[in-house]
Image (cartoon, rainbow, N blue to C red; front, side, top):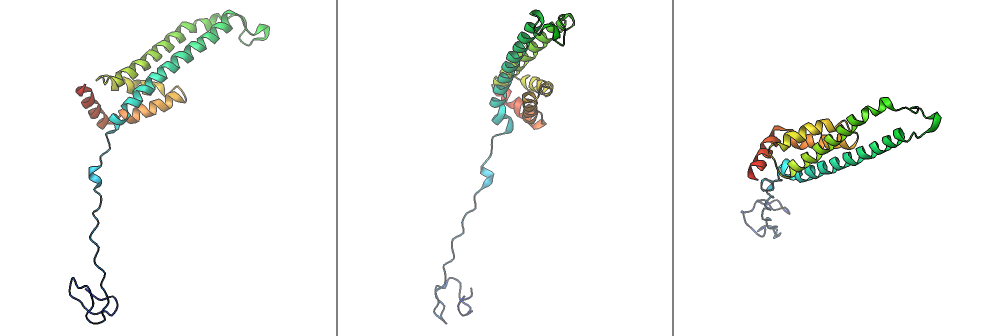
Length: 173
């Protein structure tokens, strides 16, 4: 140890310099560093599964309501001949009417599958992950909400580590 005032060499643990009498600062005890290894965040699937299942329920309800509203508007235009003689689609919707059963069936099936995916995720069904991934890919076509939900679903459930974690969660219940 060296005296900061005069540069004299001192013994370890000396409180005063014998040459100039300067007081030596006591060495501060070492501050223990926080251990970051003990703080562990819960795994990704466990943190996001409840939110993801709820979002699939909301998306299914949204698709069902939007599809039925669209069907109502289309039906009103087609069967009540809205628009008069200047209507760009004319008065005969025979070609368009053939699409109505296809659109209704697609809307109802996709909405039911979205609701089913939400149920399977919230109930931790073993097949729920695969169903949600497939529907997440299909939902990306539906801008902007379907795209956001599809990306979120794939981010949570698609990695292989998520597969192992989901299987462990599904086995527990």
